[in-house]
Amino acid sequence: MEVQGKVKMIGETQTFGSNGFRKRELVVTTDEQYPQHILVEFVQDKTDLLNNYQVGQAVKVNINLRGREWVNPQGETKYFNSIQGWRIEALQAGSAAGEMPPVPPADAFEPASNVKEEDHDDLPF
Image (tube, rainbow, N blue to C red; front, top):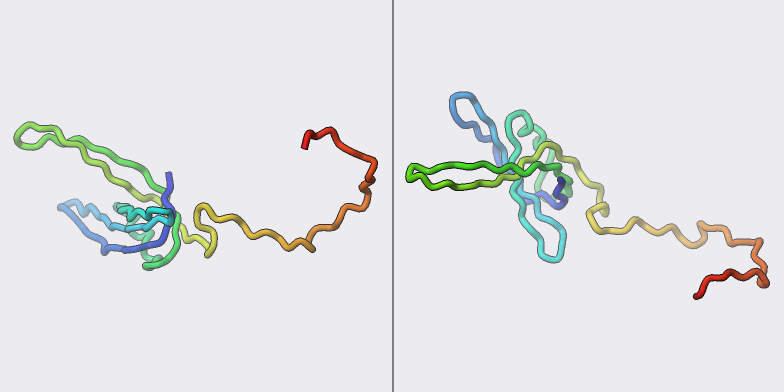
């Protein structure tokens, strides 16, 4: 799965626990009618992937959805989801999702020279 949009925020790398678990958060704002601010977590060695990106840059982020179950001290089961990034790449200007590639100018095509008026096709329109 992937998310495309502009970088809204890149967090600092956070370290947790005695084993040195590392996490870094990225927020990507999608470019659609109702833009969404998607929080993506990068963990362990993937936190370094964000070093070369900055706020406002158009990116494509490859993600995995993660889910986990937790039982609280009262015995109630809770479920949590997270979006985990594993690759990020810069998008070129104008290559965001939904945009059409540029159309070549009309003079880039040669006119057909072997067309005869009496040749017709059997298309109904």
